[in-house]
Length: 451
Image (cartoon, rainbow, N blue to C red):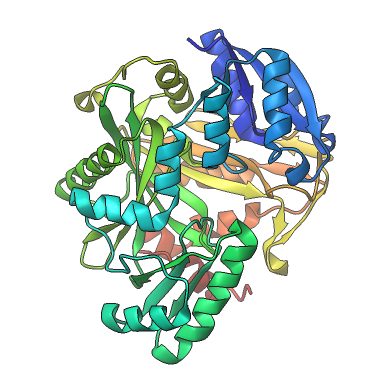
């Protein structure tokens, strides 16, 4: 087993990992920036070490500082959480070189799945359905124009190394393509220092369905069910639920089996997510693979009863999966709302500041993953998510009622949050019906006069 784990992250995911380690008897090392000297994760870990200034490039993205902290403290493993260096193949390779266990897949697999062009080819060769698109990397707008004519409009231009909605633009007609390509490519160069693009047919108004998988070193792969992540703004997820209310048993079995096939084709190891788009005809297509733990992993934990962080650590320690596919049965419905320090009425403007008071709900089937407390200051340097509110009910209606009640109890004073906005979504008739797609938030905002 891992003896001492360094958590190369901050906030609620760092706290979540520390708690799992406590229960497993694993010592923990927290790293923190100067802005996070009073952060909860730095207080809860067995050891804490400052790795740089407030900017993430000087701290949580500083590979040398993180590796130095691991060596100095004697950590034999590193968990990257999500965001920051979690999908950075160079960092995973550095861990391998330094003989420090990286809690995640190998650097080679991460590199291949992080490159969307390679990932598409891998899935195509394995017989996994992919959205019609380019089979080659694209660097010039002229070649993009030729391929778009072959694939058929509308098309979406994507950064090959992209993620989080960056480096993506849709062209509905040929006259829109040049500007869309150049804009997406500029964004890719700024965000990922790479100008490699690829092209796909744009699936209009799909559902975003992702499947959680676990894979060990011995070739065993299982699916832990799907999550519906269709409620998103600017490609950033806001509300996630499991199971999806639009999948019947036959389609659910197909998409689970396809996710397992995809993970095996990638020679994957540890926890990962296979993401699909589901079109209006109930056909699903591979979109990408996330080679890390997801923000929304708690909804899967609630419906399966499996602690995904503990499973990650066991797999990284070389142990075989403790579960077979037959062991996985979804129970009830779970839902997660992301609570952000932002003002939806002012174009979702981030709202850093001092939290003067906090009340978080509890009770049967209610869970809050957070690292905030009264007296904690939200800084402007990092992501605005400050908490995740998760509920578990016997069915979707019960989960909706619990989420409505729980959101109504949350109090976070001193800063603006999106709590009222999330409450409005939960009470929206379209959301309650389950008949929505990834355009839901845009349409919701238009109905409510939110820009």
